[in-house]
Length: 176
Figure 1 (cartoon, one colour):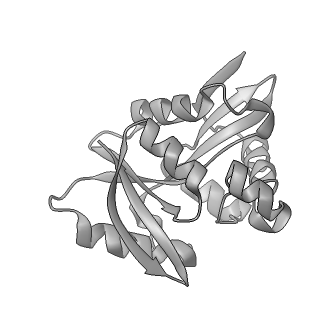
Figure 2 (cartoon, helix red, strand yellow):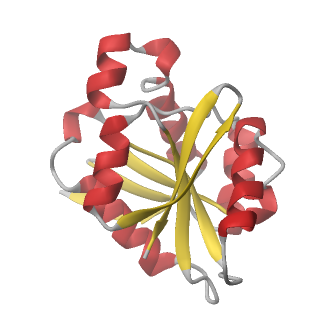
């Protein structure tokens, strides 16, 4: 049975990083990346822990093993990951009101557990666990990651803005 919760231990953070490694473009074929999707950012354990200390990452655990995660990235980390810096600037430009948002820094479900509703439940749990005063969740998806864009749209995300940075098209989406 899959349990959804916030990450609490170093072991869980290490399992997040292991799952991340298995889904980076450098570690999967082009065909798999097109069909199954991929993750873009490669985190360090130190940064992942720092982010978790501010707002616990949401994980799906099956039989003691992390099989899915949604990383909580408080805007205070806006400068810590180079590929995500432009996103925070574009979010600030695009927001008409001063929403207090949590950035979802990356989401991933293990291949063995895809198609079981884990993606949706990770976001539901993230919404439930948002710190007091936070209104919504915002994230961005690589424009080439059609599977991820479709999955996000299916659970209620709406496009906020498209922009280009670092030779890629990025789609900023907001959960309304």
